[in-house]
Length: 324
Image (tube, rainbow, N blue to C red; front, side, top):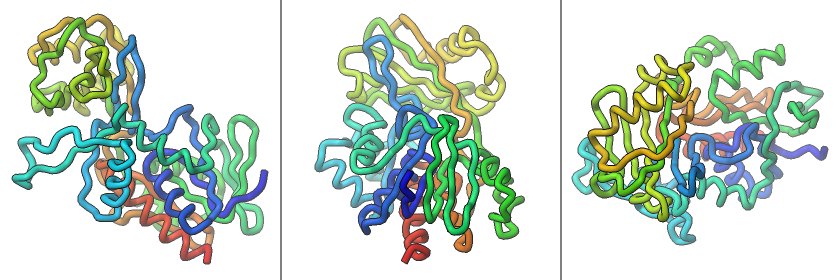
């Protein structure tokens, strides 16, 4: 397969925006992702005629570089403002909470239209041959590039790179390895009527075992079916990581019941192995320029969608310095 200037592993928001920035200056870029979909935790799924965001629920913008993207997405009808205020907001005017018109996957899908994205390509081996990277995937394909960008969660990234035998970390391997993530657990449910959640249909919960309940119908992405998303706290996700859905689902639904005025018709659960990085890397990316290797993503940008996006922007600028 023809080599590209840059190969990116991971089609989350960081990888997609990094690729978009590089394509703006006519660099050839290919993205590999092990999943069938796009966006990482910017995830939307269908269930019993409903549509539910089951990962990140919205994103905010404070940096003008991401605001320029958001303005374009607003103008193109890709996103909308869901709401502005949460009780803990430090700004009395609140912050725009943006979501996709049809779900949080709308932005990744929009970005990917102009990019070379190869789905269902799980990278199982990395190596270097002379001055190029080679990525081999579980499907038996090989991909080549001058520069490699990896945006997967750091524990997964380190496993891939450790197997190369290369000295890639410039003395920082222990610090990189120390970055930790929380696990997440979501329960998705279809209701027999309106949820009863107050407008705008999303509430933060401060009593264990929950952190969040959202009404995807009020949110506007599931117009015909009332479908709710419930997120558990970290302690519950850890305790019930290996529990069957028949155990963890009802426990979460029982905890949510006081906030709801409708009955559950059906439910399902989804596990997120890497949600919030508890101690993200202090810089927006990590680079070994000699190896033409850059690491980015929410391991570097932090928990918020904006952090991951800005990591992608910063990583692209760093990559360009090495490609000139």
